[in-house]
Amino acid sequence: MKNTLSPFISEFETIEQESSHTAWLRDKVAISLANLSPPIPHDEVMAEMDVIISQLENEQKK
Image (cartoon, rainbow, N blue to C red; front, side, top):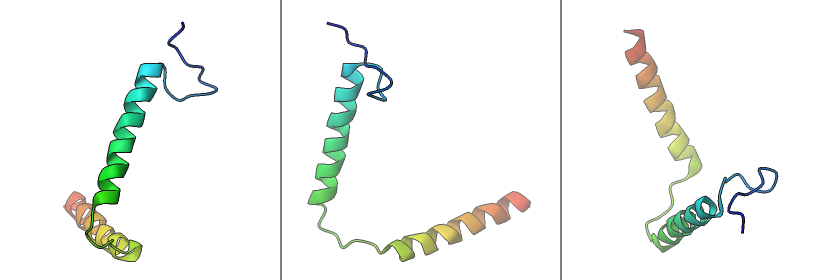
């Protein structure tokens, strides 16, 4: 059996790569679903990122 996947069907080169990625993704999703901390609103995250980006831009100008 051929272990290579068609680029038209899968973004992975081999079945092993696809299986490994799927397992990793399922683990990440399970951890996220088990997290009981309150979600952070999108607007709050974006505001924090805007501050970080501005700080980095100011540092690069120096």
